[in-house]
Length: 252
Image: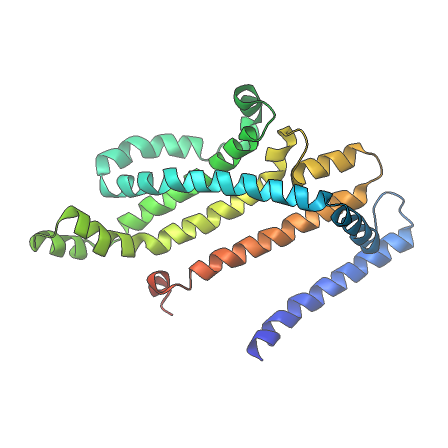
């Protein structure tokens, strides 16, 4: 019953917004902007011939590859920066300079280095994902209470045991938060990243539908699908926060 109370208000709001959209397009008799029904028909048309699933699969594959590569690089670097002050003082200024640069600004270099295949978008998604994870992981190590570290040192705990039993459990909630932020950003840049590919992905689908002329129904359909998949990815990451080894930080 409590879940129903939470679900119904946003569903009702979506229904109202879709209704306003339909009547606004109908009343203005717009020949450019599609109605919700036209968008749904366009999505069904692409789903029926398999094109839609091809684009969704290509986008998810690129985001997964770029995101996982970023996690493999960022988490060890973040832990290293958090534990060794000299490393933090050396690397942090460089990362703080690179972090605000939009992945879109890297598109010309991505084309130059990787061409118009899959590697260019993966590189851009990697750049969008890696810095939030590094910063959040290093910050998580810094927030570990020093008394735990000092107690371990005083009892002669080895470095590997200190990492397994003190550092890793303490920093895990911050790593999960960093991964959640990074995955959201990675999915956010997928449209820009796929502007440089030749034939697949939801970003390519938007550009291709726009270039086709009056297929704005497919443009809106791709935008809606990007939003729905982004919501599902965020819900998946939120489930990680419910793990026993993570939720201790949130006091549940």
